[in-house]
Every structure is written in structure tokens, then in C-alpha cells.
Length: 160
Ligand SMILES: [Ca+2]
Ligand SMILES: [Ca+2]
Image (cartoon, rainbow, N blue to C red; front, side):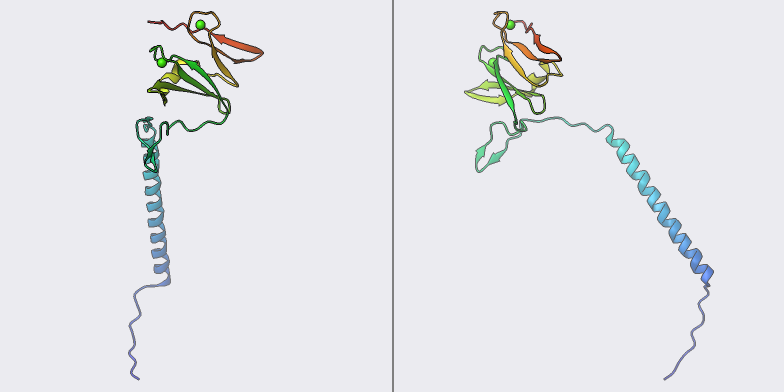
């Protein structure tokens, strides 16, 4: 067997150690760069907003769901009210489990989810809500829980 002496590589332990440190420094720089990239993405997301689109159809087994974007109900109280002033009663639904108001407009004998009417109702309604006309003006008023009793909000909508 023939052997050949290989020349010692011009590298010492210290050199290897310093290479290791350089690689380590490089990893820290990469991590710092990634951190800056992540922070800039987070800062850019501050301007991110969502827009609710309820017009997207949901089809299950060739059946188009009527109100797929309502989110479901848990414990609701339902009252009738003409939301769009077309002389046809629509629905106001109050989900007691999350104190959420939902509105549905009557259209072709169906009730279609219409969240654009929800902000017409006072915020902060909680525990229970019923719509009844207490002053016989033909417009449903709001009865709801308030601390220590029952709150009443008069419907002051113009009936034109
Ligand atoms: Ca109506
Ligand atoms: Ca009234």
C-alpha cells in the first residue's frame, strides 16, 4: 500500500473557532434581518382592514343557502319591525348569548340577512330586547334591560 503524506491544511484550531464565530455572527445577522422583516410586516398590517361581503353564495348539495353569513344563533328573541319602510314587516333578532342584534329584510316571502340596518339600533343592548309600539304611533319602539329596570327607546323614524 502506498501512502502519501498530505500537507497540513493551513488552518488552526483558532482559525476554525473564528470561522465558527463568523458563521454564528452570520446567523445572528440573518435572524436580525428576519426579525426586522417580520416587524415591518406587522407594522404594514396595522393598515389592514376587513370588509364584510354577504353577497357571496354558498351552495351545499346543489342548494343555495339563504343566509349563510349570519353566523348562527344560540338564544334569540325575535321581533317584527319594518326596517326598510316598505310596509312589510321585517325581522329584528337579538341573540341573548352574545348580546348581538341581527336584522333581516322580508323579500319574496324569505328573510334575507341585512346587516346594514343593525347600526340603527342602540349599541350596548344586553340581556333581552323586544320591539313593541308603546305609544301607538305605528312604529315599533325598543324595550330592553337596563341596570335596575327596563329601558325604553322611542322610535323617532320619519314614516315617509
Ligand atoms: Ca320592510
Ligand atoms: Ca312607537
